[in-house]
Image 1 (tube, rainbow, N blue to C red):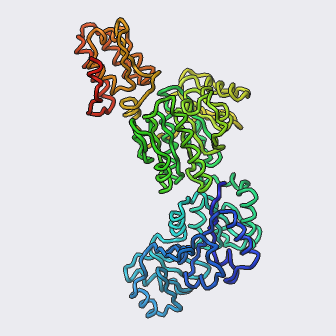
Image 2: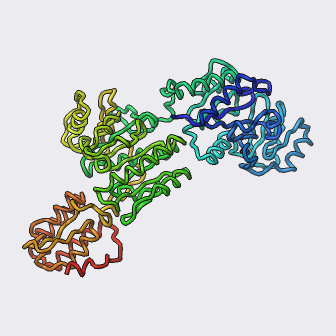
Length: 577
């Protein structure tokens, strides 16, 4: 479900001549009975409005005084966004002949043609106030306060997002309300300017238009309106001829594919930056710590501790993005942890619409081909999978993909691998040995693939800064010190352990692996740091270095790139000796 909330204006929208007819009330109750939320957003003062409503508790929140306060009908609690009006300002308006004047908790209101006198008084008194018009009404509020700010506070109280709101109105003061919602609707009797700005215009007017909108929501969740919501599109980049390529933030299900070091994480970070800027919430499941340095999300979990479901839900419940670092979990056990986390995230999305996006890094580890997904809820949209090979990811997952982004070497082979899994014809992709950095092949499966120069991420991440220094790479990917006669079996699951064991093993063992180029091979294939491996090769090839000197050179190469903990694991060096 996309729309969890209906935010509606009162006068001229829900109500006609100050009253809501029976048919409209029936539609409102029908909407609320589905478990969705209702928020009333009005320019009226609260007490005046409550006197008109037969039952205010049908609304989960009432935003009154044009966004200046939020009222909870269930508890009768009131939260104001700004302080009340200065008494001397109201007195000066009366002195200058402005009448009538209505004074609320925050708002001051009068009628045209007093707007010039109001503006002059604000100027003369040096006040930071704004004037908002509403079909002849002149409303004076603190700067920055409007229906959108009131709606935002109401949604925060309810733990919901504006991206799951459809808002409906009719007048000048509804522009901010409609613009802040995922879908903005104008009833048929709306002012022309609002009609031009709306995503949808109802055929009926006033309350009948709201009832029409509710029927549309309950029938298909406004699915037919989705193609019009281009204002929410997320930029991916541009084609070489300058055509903009965008991602539909609600409909897309994406797989980013490419070899290690090809730019998958960098491209994904750019997309996440733009999702965050647009206030779409996301959760990252990060098996190997690629996102531990991001400032886009709250990072949970560590190399020695798995993230907990409850703490992830707490962060998401506060409206923040979250990254679950699974680096401390052995590779073989990561699918099990994944199976615990995903249902909770899916349940939260069903109830609240959030997180809007789920990012699954190293998808071939978390959703391997042989793993059963029968009991695992797979999202049909709003998921971005990152993997080396699409053929290594469970077929049930691959079949939900509608967009592929290939980076790095031989993108046509990546596309062909996915086509083989899906059993569909191979589209035309120009063969190339390696795409230039920042370039990708973008393929929406219902269109032809295109070459895209992706929008650069604003912040470069320190990739791998802790990923391989402390995390558990698992038994199959650890470095094992065996020695020339295979008398040892000392396993180092990360660079931290590797360096400590290197200091402790005997010279013969150290030199045996050095001359066999075992250290550079492990760093290249398992640590996946090509530049580090190349530097270590130079050390391995330098036969003039003593064991002590080669140890120091390799340690320096590692420490130049990685932040290592200062404490030494107990027992490691002693065991090595």
